[in-house]
Image: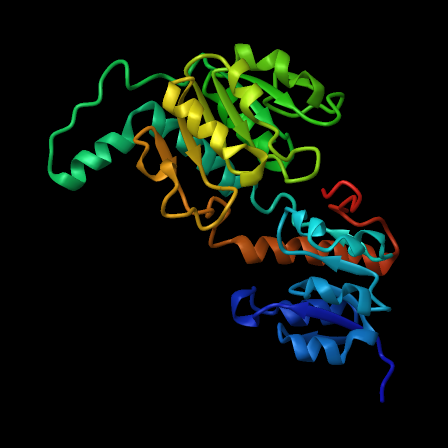
Length: 323
């Protein structure tokens, strides 16, 4: 039986760029390559897997003694909350942070344009063959509005740039407000949320789900929020208290919302959000793009080069905080 180390590619070769496997082999010729998403095959090789990309069953981490690095294919690592033992294991976890920046920031901005120009009502009229004129006060301009971006990573920064380019005032909120971001006019810390809400026209959340961000926007925050504000969420559903949001929408405190993520997914059929005309719902696909797998693989190959040279990896996740 061979003791050759393995690089596991948990991918469907047909969904990744041509020559992907060959590109890995050329960078790591001394490694055996295992291209598989089959759990039983992964289990048979657990003792020799040193590097893994994309699909690796989370409950098997503790049984993989040779694993040194796992490159996940997504940006969020909230799965660590369901598999807390992985936090203590010695492998390095890297994310695909940045892979979503273009599609999700465009999705977020699309929410603003659609809500601002009354497109949901117009589409409902079109589906019924009814001439539906959307006029004041249902429509609004985004220019001149103040937007508070919750979580300024790669997605939040690109969204901030889109907003700034459209004459919006952009305030960013992040754990370390000392780190600037293009497009953000002013950066504040997490503890300054309540000070900003009364002056905010649009709250746009890209927050990951951690113990710190669970129900980050709750009943108290919606009470503080400026009357008639807009809420956009593409981060994680549980960062917003959905019941409190529904109440704020019913009262008019929140004028409208664009939501791609929810506390329970798929969104239950009996959720009142479905029937709210001022709510625009998409089914957690804001990150979808034809170039997704290509970008993930580019991140992995860059990191593989770094790994082979013994250099620090890109997008390392702090497993204690979850991002």
